[in-house]
Length: 68
Image 1 (cartoon, helix red, strand yellow):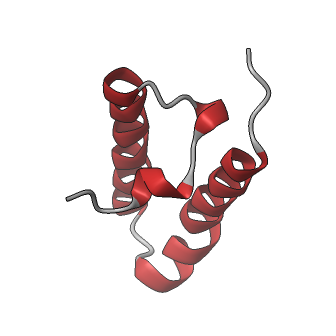
Image 2: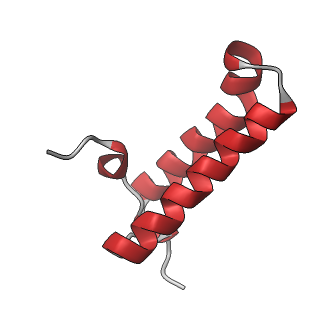
Protein backbone atom coordinates (compact mmCIF):
# COMPACT_ATOMS: atom_id res chain seq x y z
CA UNK A 1 0.00 0.00 0.00
CA UNK A 2 1.25 3.44 -0.92
CA UNK A 3 2.11 5.87 1.89
CA UNK A 4 -0.58 8.58 2.19
CA UNK A 5 0.35 12.09 1.09
CA UNK A 6 0.38 14.79 3.76
CA UNK A 7 -2.71 16.29 2.14
CA UNK A 8 -4.50 12.92 2.29
CA UNK A 9 -3.75 12.71 6.01
CA UNK A 10 -4.99 16.29 6.51
CA UNK A 11 -8.25 15.61 4.62
CA UNK A 12 -8.82 12.36 6.52
CA UNK A 13 -8.30 14.10 9.84
CA UNK A 14 -10.74 16.87 8.85
CA UNK A 15 -13.42 14.38 7.79
CA UNK A 16 -12.94 12.49 11.04
CA UNK A 17 -13.17 15.72 13.06
CA UNK A 18 -16.38 16.62 11.24
CA UNK A 19 -17.94 13.24 11.98
CA UNK A 20 -16.74 12.91 15.59
CA UNK A 21 -16.66 16.50 16.85
CA UNK A 22 -18.43 19.10 14.72
CA UNK A 23 -21.53 17.25 13.50
CA UNK A 24 -22.61 15.86 16.90
CA UNK A 25 -22.21 19.25 18.59
CA UNK A 26 -23.39 21.64 15.89
CA UNK A 27 -25.46 19.73 13.34
CA UNK A 28 -27.43 17.00 15.08
CA UNK A 29 -27.48 14.73 18.08
CA UNK A 30 -29.36 12.01 16.21
CA UNK A 31 -27.31 8.81 16.00
CA UNK A 32 -29.19 7.87 12.83
CA UNK A 33 -28.25 11.14 11.12
CA UNK A 34 -24.63 10.82 12.20
CA UNK A 35 -24.50 7.27 10.81
CA UNK A 36 -26.06 8.59 7.58
CA UNK A 37 -23.35 11.27 7.29
CA UNK A 38 -20.68 8.62 7.72
CA UNK A 39 -22.35 6.28 5.21
CA UNK A 40 -22.63 9.09 2.64
CA UNK A 41 -18.94 9.94 3.00
CA UNK A 42 -17.99 6.26 2.67
CA UNK A 43 -20.10 5.97 -0.50
CA UNK A 44 -18.48 9.09 -1.94
CA UNK A 45 -14.98 7.77 -1.18
CA UNK A 46 -15.87 4.43 -2.81
CA UNK A 47 -17.17 6.29 -5.86
CA UNK A 48 -14.07 8.45 -6.32
CA UNK A 49 -11.89 5.37 -5.90
CA UNK A 50 -13.80 3.42 -8.55
CA UNK A 51 -14.56 6.27 -10.97
CA UNK A 52 -11.49 8.47 -10.58
CA UNK A 53 -8.86 6.14 -9.12
CA UNK A 54 -8.48 8.32 -6.03
CA UNK A 55 -7.40 6.11 -3.14
CA UNK A 56 -7.22 6.99 0.53
CA UNK A 57 -3.49 7.61 0.03
CA UNK A 58 -4.09 10.14 -2.75
CA UNK A 59 -7.12 11.92 -1.30
CA UNK A 60 -7.04 15.71 -1.69
CA UNK A 61 -9.19 18.76 -1.04
CA UNK A 62 -9.86 18.92 -4.79
CA UNK A 63 -11.96 15.75 -4.41
CA UNK A 64 -14.47 17.81 -2.43
CA UNK A 65 -14.62 20.73 -4.87
CA UNK A 66 -17.45 21.29 -7.29
CA UNK A 67 -16.43 20.41 -10.83
CA UNK A 68 -17.87 22.23 -13.80
